[in-house]
Length: 280
Image 1 (cartoon, rainbow, N blue to C red):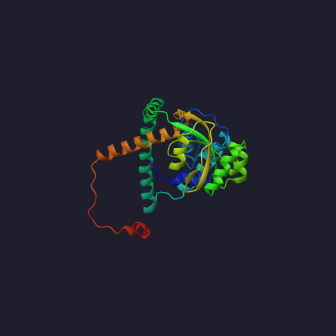
Image 2 (spheres, helix red, strand yellow):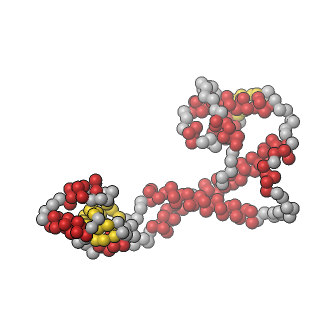
Image 3 (cartoon, rainbow, N blue to C red):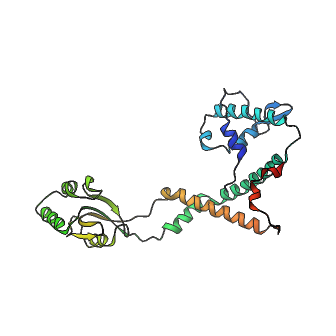
């Protein structure tokens, strides 16, 4: 799918924004300009505009229209100056780009047919419809270097000390400045000793000192909830991308498999691909 459209890239880079030209648009065959006897139609502009990068698609219609028309007039004038004497390199480039445009058109059509609201919903249901909810935990902790420090914190908390204030003053972990808050996390997101301690706790309680490879933790469990499947809109982009990739791969594989292909048995030096002198 990553087929480079060099003419479009050059067009985008060379886009000159001029004042709008008043044209009564009727259909794709409406002639906008005639250059050396060659007609530039509204259809030409539509085809080019639809393939421009996003930043140009966002331009105001009048600026995009006038800029594309002026650029196309210049391109036609320059192209006509070559007459019929095209170099071998240019002929081969035009042929390659024709293949690329046609291939992209086939792939785009397959993607358009495959990515529908129904197919997106079906994929969402398949991926998320049968997910059993898991427990998620909201906890805070104070991280210190020794068990003695951790036990002293537990004693202070039992005496009524404020957990968040102690975390800000004594924790050596990155969550200390935030009062030790870790936010919501699910199974497997914390190291095993920490997770096991949290699982055994009740909301609102404080743990005994817990040792991990990071040091000693005093944990407060703030809340527990059941995880919910991500809403469709949050994962729509990923689902559409997956459907697009599958549709593109399927149409490529099927058409290539159905085509008679004969590969040359001649041994070619791969370095020759860089030898432009062969095109002279």
